[in-house]
Image 1 (cartoon, chains in turn cyan, green):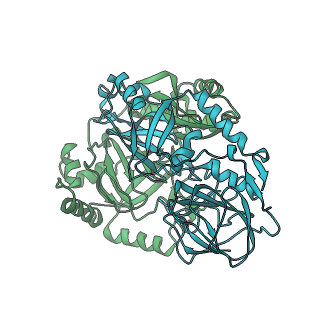
Image 2 (cartoon, chains in turn red, blue):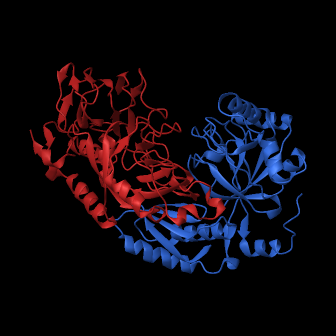
Length: 326
Length: 289
């Protein structure tokens, strides 16, 4: 059992790959936004890949352990302490029953991940423990953690091994740099944008708005311009150039809502009536997850093949070869 | 236009959008669901999920198991295997939903919008006027005079896009601009040429003409209809709206509240598009009920 002393800004139970199989009924995958860091945390404590852990956003929680456990923290640097003594990131450590783990605000990055050997064992909803708080499902009672709640833990007695650390070159390269090189695959609706519009997208700085969350990242930047496909279309597509007959949205879509691009992420809508000129591939999601309002994105167009190669490279790092002994 | 060959477009490293056409058309949507059924039943391993929509199918795939080009080739073969529309049938349950037209709750929501956001014509009056109907009684008659086809689900869990199957009952309406910040759960709205039911209290833009006490999604899975899924509908289902009095509405609402409500659904139904086309040819589409 894990007792929530302070919940943090918005801390949720997540599992990977999330809620699969109900997308066509409107349920997003949810799951950890930076699954690179999340999966490494599970690997550190010896959990199965689909074990549930916590995603802590911007300011982390304070938690008291009801039993001994081996835990690991990865992702954003939230100045973690255990009974007020600093705790290392990217390393499995032993926690004793009654000890208090405390996370502060993120000095570097935005989202930290906590894995506990044995996993968090809230009741799965539609096959997953991932929280989708917009609709109140999954996690603990459907929402982010609240003060005083108790999280059930799996039977981790004897499981997990302390002193395991992720090699530095195998972690997401987090720095305090606020400018991100972001990959984007053209499509599905790249042919709705004219050449000047594509040039502005790829050559401009895009600033992350404060209204950004696990649903979408809103960006400020220059205006978009369109081809005849957007401006001369059948009336049922809608009036605005960015309107299209309702269609499915890929996760990672750069969804153009009027003139505002919104990158749709893990809890984003499954369908809607706006075009998606680009899609941010899964290998770049750790950058979305670790960026903050005010950060700048610079996009680079990549092919489907390059995006898949980058993802393969990350997947290969979720392996024992990435672990060293402390 | 309904395409003779599907168009495939990448959505990053793990999605492919398959476009079957670019117009609002029941025939096109029926083809979408016929192809979707074949993908579910016979599609290659490595396709993770699909989202059928009005004119397209979003495909999620695992590129470690199947490359992009193979998804395209195999799904194209399934597209052609579907064959001519008139020979097709799909399982299609019919749900009967009691609804109260011109109810006090959607009126309250409208009043709140006018007070806080913008003035506009009342929704039922606007829909009746734009569609050339004599009065609100005719709006209720026309709106409830047809089966609706669940053309797509999405945006929010359980949210439905409904197409009227009887062309004499088609209604069109612009969406709220700017949109509402909230809408009552169970509100029935019309936007563009589609009808929708709000599964929960959410923002919205469709013109509100009625409300149903019957839940179409239930995260607590309290009612029997939600034993297997949190959302009531599947693509290809049909919905029939049954006008309800204030008393009938309260009766059903009380059953829902008590957890005893049984959704009224005919599970044995199939939909034959050949029969549908033959029936369409016999009616005068310009008349109204």
